[in-house]
Length: 124
Image 1: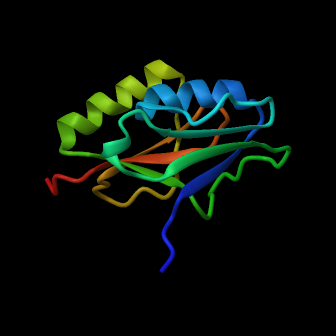
Image 2: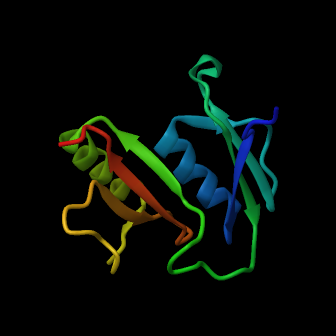
């Protein structure tokens, strides 16, 4: 049986993206990043989770991507705090046109414009 080992994001600036995602997730480079490739892994190997690979790409960012990352927060307060922390790291709020009536997620974009969500998993 296979498992997800790494999620890959295309970016226009590998160094900038690596700095953002390292701070956002508490990940560290697996090895010295190059100008066109970086692999980030959890700083605590026991924490688990897939690696995040960042590859240099000239492809434009998709406004409504088919694949994106969901970052989980424990409740609405933790979600709000994480959104503010991530914005402070350089994420941007996205004016998302597909929010449901009572969304449990907030759409952000990383420093490269890649969309991702911060989810309130508390069910409130």
